[in-house]
Image (tube, rainbow, N blue to C red):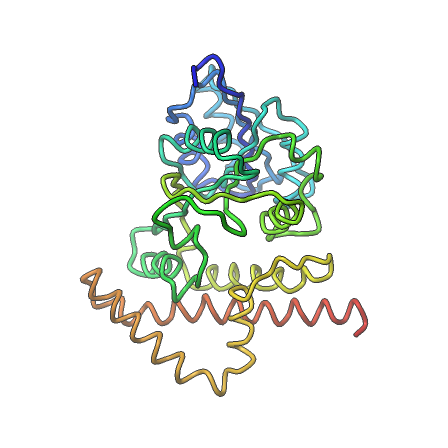
Length: 322
């Protein structure tokens, strides 16, 4: 497609307290091979209390020709941020951008190409998880989110050999008109807004396309406390989402719940599997320290997610008075 005929793309970046990563994220967008005059960036900030806003304004000052707007998100949650961004956008295509990530140079151009040519209603790529700090623990946490034992059958985390239709993707690319037909993001679906939206798309007969040559680089929490809390919150919203009638949750989302519920029985097989995969990773990475750290990272991932799922389910059952 000729450059003049390319659609205008609106990149919506929900963020809150992302002073460590927002500049890297914006730099990766500035370096995209998609025409700058065909891009606008809307950073929707959840009233950050660190230097995030200051860094965004400084980026605007240093790049005056870059179409970048900073918009407030008083509700402070991601689905609300996406809705604010969509309502203020000018583009024909909406791409959700995660502030805790950076993006390959052809990320936007590939998203647009496959969205226009495939007939899919949403296009997304794979996530390569990288350590957010130069420590062996941060590396172990990143590896736990890249291994099948850590993330199950999640294709956008594990990768794929060729484009394929899936149930959901992260950082999706959509034609703006889809929101006119199906509605905006569900603000009750906190932390699972992508899963909920993509569930509606599939129920309406639409398709979600995963393209492995579209690549984002995600930087997870670098310490065990924050990593555990993050997984707990993800697990909580997975089951609490039953309150809003979300039935997009698959078996892979519930396995950590079953693991925690059956802990007295499952603990020894789990330990053996964890040690086996940890040894495998340590050998591949040529770092024996990972043999001792990977089981801890895996456990924080699984136990945190599973425990959060239990608390989410309990809260759901209490509220529906079952």
